[in-house]
Length: 444
Image (spheres, rainbow, N blue to C red):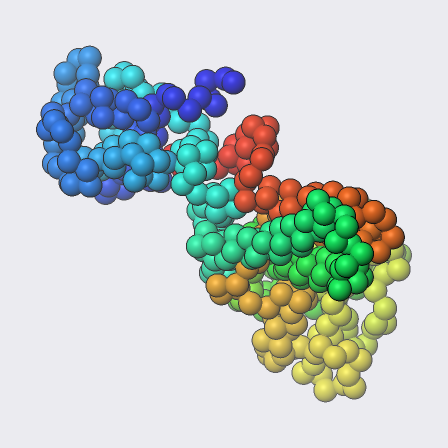
């Protein structure tokens, strides 16, 4: 274990944003938190927990007066990490904060690494792993939808759903293992073994239903790229501007105006999206610069989670056969009054149909998962993979309940329970924790 993994060092970190502010909070956590704080300020003995004290802060070596700050003491185990924590609420200038942090380090604290405080909270049983991961999502949320999903997970919605699944697996496993302990009861069993298979399949279906929300959860957490593509002069740039709400891309009646990909961030009902306006796709009669734009457009389409294919009522409908992407076809220039060739029709010039298009985009991005309130939504790829493992083990258990000795079915159920437990952080190794918490910001 290296120094960054130590659970005995006293840590110091800026808990608020690393930018100038009226107030900044420096958190000191660990066995010697009070000792470090006493080196910076004159504090009563005993120090009263959860009582705000205004104190002068000085450097422990030079005695230089640094600031006046509010000092708060959170006594173990009633703190975020479960350890003694002292918070210093000081003035928030960048150099000011740095000088106080330097003083804390000189007094014996160590600078906290990314996510190290939250990791200690998890290791000390103050928070489950999936709730710890939600804290990082909460900090990084860019839209209200992402924020709601992070809050739901932080407040335990996903944990409760996983606990319910685990309880069902445990109950079924206990019933089967009881029969294995008393094999003579198998002959007297009123319930056919096929009922065990049905019960295991039912839990597998619940795992699958929860995992299906990852389509929306991933979009909320990571955002999605939507490429706007189509033939030249179909009105892609005009549609891009209409969706963004401002004139970001140049438009002209001459085909081939767009030569490079242009991006803009938009919020579609809580889903953070990056819209990408691309060059019109055609194969003949183009110059070298436009060909480069077309190649770049194909690359953007390949990267996108969804391609919004724009058609002109006077041009062919079919998208390019070489495209490999989820397509949503929309007909532009609705204001021309020509016969419809698509269920989605808009006029980028007048704005007609734009709201319906946004609704269709949201529906395509959400999939089957529609709610983002207090419901459990799987936002994390790790959780989705573990749910998939649990589902597969449960389906194997259903097969083995009918066709194999019950011992094998019990093993399958144990594997399913193990996968679910890992979502909550039970029996996880240090390497996984390193990977998870390295993505956190320092001070969290």
